[in-house]
Image (cartoon, rainbow, N blue to C red; front, side, top):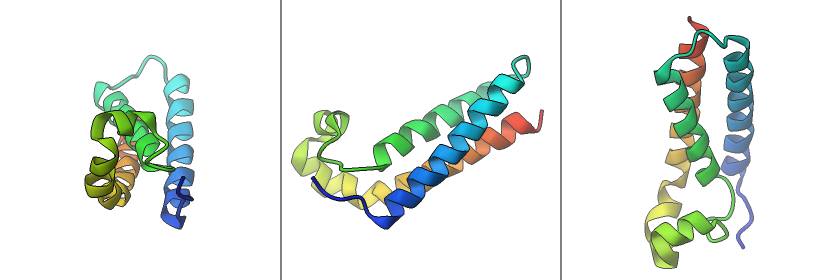
Length: 99
């Protein structure tokens, strides 16, 4: 098990704040739902889930990539997936709040 790095903590905190804000606004505005906002927030939450924590402990990643695939492909792009997660959640929150 590898300990989480500082960028993983940062991405976790920002993802949780954005996802919580999105869910609160989503249930506040029940009748005004945008498909783009829902899709981007779902994708951002899933990317945030994959970004945080030990990549070897995540059973989904082990099933998809294997240990050598995680070391070769996933760990180097993990920070970029975190930034994409924050971007998608931010867009979903923005799209939902403007209506």
